[in-house]
Image (tube, rainbow, N blue to C red; front, side):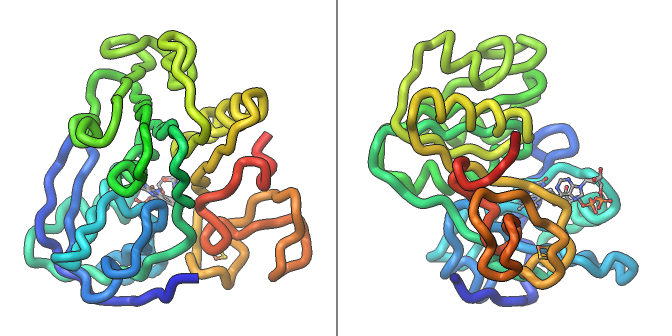
Length: 257
Ligand SMILES: Cc1cc2nc3c(=O)[nH]c(=O)nc-3n(C[C@H](O)[C@H](O)[C@H](O)COP(=O)(O)OP(=O)(O)OC[C@H]3O[C@@H](n4cnc5c(N)ncnc54)[C@H](O)[C@@H]3O)c2cc1C
Ligand code: FES
């Protein structure tokens, strides 16, 4: 398990990269050094009435300049508050939290849906293998897709058919007859369920990142459990804490339907 740090980070820059989607680079003293692709940070609000940190995936890591990038959608009061923050402002963050993606060397699918796309960018940078990167969006308001291009073959799916393949990420695989030996995915639950089934049919490895509402973010409150095939060492029941045993799981290990 990686050591976690709570620190006062400083905002290097923040910009809106699509409607209500923001990219923020943060200078950290220690988090960037040990963070891995697929891990997340807890970002604290400055408004004291919202004391629990908001879990946000690490999108990119710049270890040389001790910086991390997060990309988030404004979903409620906490993320709305972050969206008004400017360069030079301090922000408390805790991390790196959870476990990242294991890195294989066989040909890989990197599959992201909506706001699940950000953590795959750092993974795309780090994986040393052939990559088919499939990004699913609602419509042509895409984000980050251009930055993936230097790391593999990028394919886009849009639900409304306004860009790329019309439909979802599995429609891309079928339409283009793509194949790979391992899947890394992050996105909405129906997408992860479909990918789990696809991986079972094809008998390939599938690593999925799960999201759940979180409270402590560090394994203490059991507020984020999902059903697992094997018993959890901590509670001795068929549960896994997404914040500590996840968010990345072998799809065979978790019961997501
Ligand atoms: C491991 C992990 C990684 C995440 N990474 C990202 C990311 O990279 N970018 C991003 O935009 N969001 C990410 N999320 C979701 C993000 O944590 C929530 O959108 C955020 O906490 C909402 O906070 P808020 O105060 O703005 O909204 P709230 O007022 O707390 O809630 C507003 C809405 O967001 C929903 N929500 C709250 N918490 C979560 C959650 N944990 N998961 C899903 N929905 C939630 C609520 O049900 C509600 O509908 C991640 C969540 C987890 C668990
Ligand atoms: S959020 Fe508290 S145990 Fe996961």
